[in-house]
Length: 239
Image (cartoon, rainbow, N blue to C red):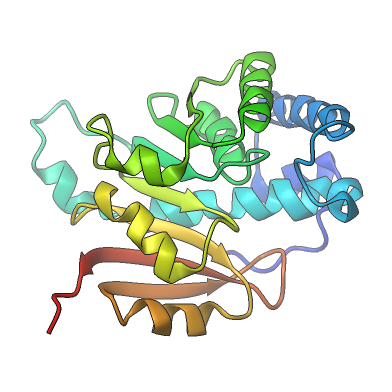
């Protein structure tokens, strides 16, 4: 990953850290305005973080973009496609427990600039938060699919499908989270989960029920946090 940046406390610092276009920055500024407006009536983020949105939420989410694209195992996947149908990166993204849109909606805004053919699905059970996500998507002109249902229910439905990249922030401990994401996994799927200081302990607990290949990266926004990158997920057989 890139060297740890200084505190990203403004739109300008965000642009410098992540190299986004003016259009993307304007979309994120619109997002910031809507977040602070809706936060008055809906608890979208911890109130203590509202004055540090660019670092605690936008940058914390945006750092997953490069990690996800670099980690997605697309070499074998692309080899199976006819010539002329090669894609530039993972196209089918899923964010579970999207809440106020972190990281999924921020990633969708970055995708709109860097890979417009990619699609993000946001799953959020709270109808008010889902309405907020829809309003941000509408005002920023970013195409996303929003499913207003519990992640557990969404995973059991026939319309669920294999995903290239799966993200979730603060949804559940890894042992439970891996059960939620398992239906979407193929050999080419990568899951990217921001975790706190207990990431190693959660991985050890998850290994009781699942087999997987996992690595961790340091977070760019929190010295004690880690980004868990997980592939080749399978359920362990009993006995």
